[in-house]
Amino acid sequence: MKIVKFNLVDQDNRKTKDTDLIGKYTVLYFFPKAGTTGCTKEAQDFSKAIEWFESRKTQIYGISKDSPEVLKNFKEKYQLKVNLLSDENCEFANSLNVQKDGKIVRSTFILDCWNRIRWSMFNVKVDGHVEKVEEQLEKIIQQDKALNELIELRRARRALSEDKISDEQLEVLLKAAHLAPSCSNKQPWRFIVVRSQDTLTKLHEALSGGNYWMKKAPVLIVVHSKKDMDCQLSDNRDYFLFDLGQAVAFLQIQATQMGLVAHPVAGFDPMIVKKILPIPQEHTVITILAIAYPTGDLSKLSEKHQVAELSERDRQPLENVVHVL
Image 1 (cartoon, rainbow, N blue to C red):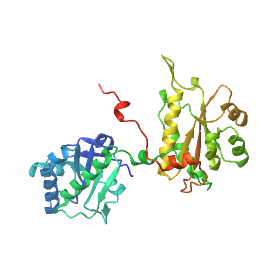
Image 2: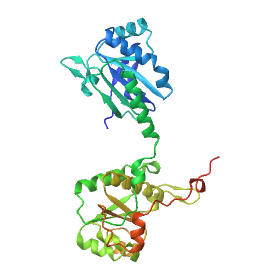
Image 3: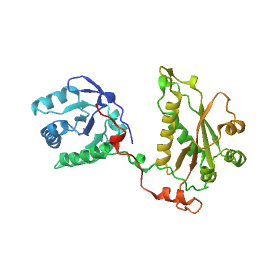
Image 4: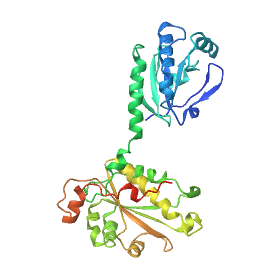
């Protein structure tokens, strides 16, 4: 999704930039010229609906090539309730491809609370347009209120394909992990990507018997660190464990989006892993992730794991783990 960037002035010559929009939904509508019939009606229609939009934490900005002075007169003459922005050199309009042959194409964009464009319409017809925007905004708000579908999709799958994972895919997964937050931005995580068959075979010897299924994975990622690479706080809060968990979670969500399995396990002998890989003895090997494409072929799984692969998610009731004061 494209994130908008701009730095404009409004009808009162007040600076307005993209960062001012963060935290609310925003409707940006481009119009050709202040005072013309269509542009006046569009501004009036949005103004009439302003309370509806504000009740949904949404702000509205109309944008044109007109000067701030012209926009001020336009707003005052028709008692408009929307803010108007001047894009005299059309730099912002060009960034969104809404200028053609030197003229602004009537267009509308809905941005979410992070300034991402979630919906757009070009060559807008004024009649009934505000109603269309309301309908689309309501859909976006409901989508954003819902549980993230990637979190719902992520499963600890064990039926793995042996198809290769590309360098590009691995780089994206590791970038996702590396963007995780950490205490004082310490970034304590360290990853070893293992995909040579010789080293994979050696690592297989470190796995517990119940993790036999990992031997199908074309890539294993070993995650390690030590506590003094991160914050060490009161009450034995060695934050490196928490921060590595966050990094692995980011990697798992990214893998799910890419149609991959990223399954971390605790069942392995860390001493054997350290003998095989260049990991300092003072480091803790936290987890090993199997990275692979999923497959529907469950024939190589144990009966227990075949059942688990197809079962519903098993979670305690939320009230068992949440205490609200």
